[in-house]
Every structure is written in structure tokens, then in C-alpha cells.
Image 1 (cartoon, rainbow, N blue to C red):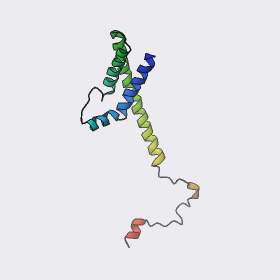
Image 2 (cartoon, helix red, strand yellow):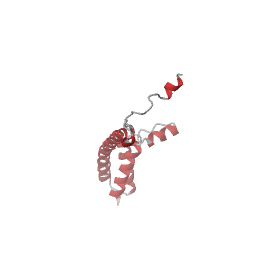
Image 3 (cartoon, one colour):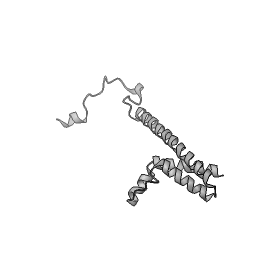
Image 4 (spheres, rainbow, N blue to C red):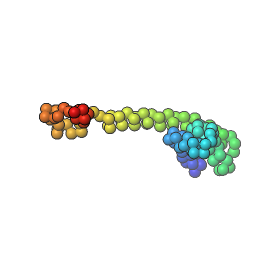
Length: 122
């Protein structure tokens, strides 16, 4: 049971930092919290605290905390990669310059070449 809780806590610490939730809390409180605004630090201290709640001995608790802090780096890197992929796909899908229905377009043969800005000049 503790392993599942540790995995979930590691994800929560990384996701909260990655999504900017910790920064938002710091802005609201007008207080800088260096232990929480770093994914590695937040993960390390949170897992260590959880292990002490589960009454783990110190060596396994430290080992698990350090291991999770290291894994937090990779989770954060993966989340950054997903963000990059999302931004690229968003650009391709929503900022495309092609018409949505190319079969209904007549290629501009009968289209008016004047725009709104041309009409306002008259």
C-alpha cells in the first residue's frame, strides 16, 4: 500500500509544480516556499514525510525519497515533452491557413478581392 501512495504522491508533486499550482499558491500567499516550488524537493520531503507517517525506518525512507526525487526529474521531462507535442499539434490544427472545406471554395475566381479595410478607406 505504501508503494502506491508514494507513486501517487510523486506524481502529484511533479504535476502541481509543472502546472504552476505551487507558483499560484505562492503568489496568493505572497510568500516564497522553496521546498515546494521545486519538483525534486517537494517530492523528496513529501515522500519522506509519508514514510515517517507509515513508520518506516530511516534508511528505507531516505532511499525511497531520493529515488522518487530522481524519478521526479524524468516525470517532469516527460511532461515537458508532452507540452511541446501539444503545442506543435495545436499549431497544426488550429492555425492552419487552408480553408476548412476546400471542395466548396471556387479558388477565388468569383470572390471579391476587397476586405473590410478596403471598404473603410472610401
